[in-house]
Image (cartoon, rainbow, N blue to C red; front, side):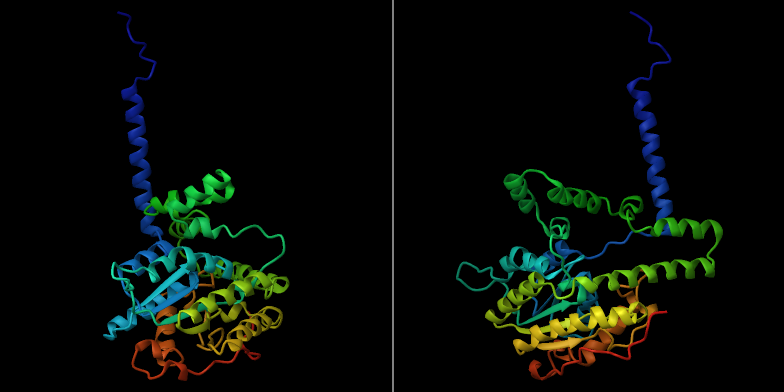
Length: 362
């Protein structure tokens, strides 16, 4: 029998090297998590599971901003309220996307009946359409919203799309997101596109410096301002307004007490251009839709008095401090009826659509 060439790697050698490499990668990931712990934001999947396992009195549907209503539900529970709220957040959502989520993920649960023909979950009586200027932003010829396959599809939706159209870039976003979410315990995987880890490593090596922190904040501020100001040519897009109308028609047909609620914006991104050319016409369009139906309209764009310190680094979502302020504010004022002890819900006042004296951006 011929001798094995010692320079030729055996399967044991390959396995050993691979194992050592994997362990090194895991150890590095665990260490890096001490600098930047992975985030696990609530998605449609968790919200649908919560709805399936419960019997809520209030449904909140909106973009990723709807995550702040989880804090509202937590306050209700802490106060011993029997009211239950399920918030369904769709990242980068717009009304056409919300409509898909409503009819394909939520209605089967809302309308589910038992063998006797009774609703399995029959306590739903309120609907909050959480919105902002972005939800009615649209442009002719824009690609389909990829957040539906990536954030809202279930496996049968993926199979149907592949059967109907083949595996394409649109349906592949479902696969890539499943992969990412399956490994969201890893900061090396979950931080892709967020850059939290890079900043954390730099701070750990160099030490946290005020000038670097402010430079990052200023860069994010400019980015956030640019996003809003770029909305001047997409305000009140007809297809998104039409989808909003259809969602509200569904809520009316089902007899739900419905509110249109605008989410707070960071005051430092509200430049004069953003306020006058994006926010004012957007708020007018949203208010008009609500007014035509006699719905409660609450505009929290500026009303709560939040500051930049109440928002996350992205200047879009509230941080835990901001969530707590938001929950306390809405439950003590216009949305106090969510507590279930505030009398007729229809008595809740409206908050005006404009804020001409809102703080300008830094």
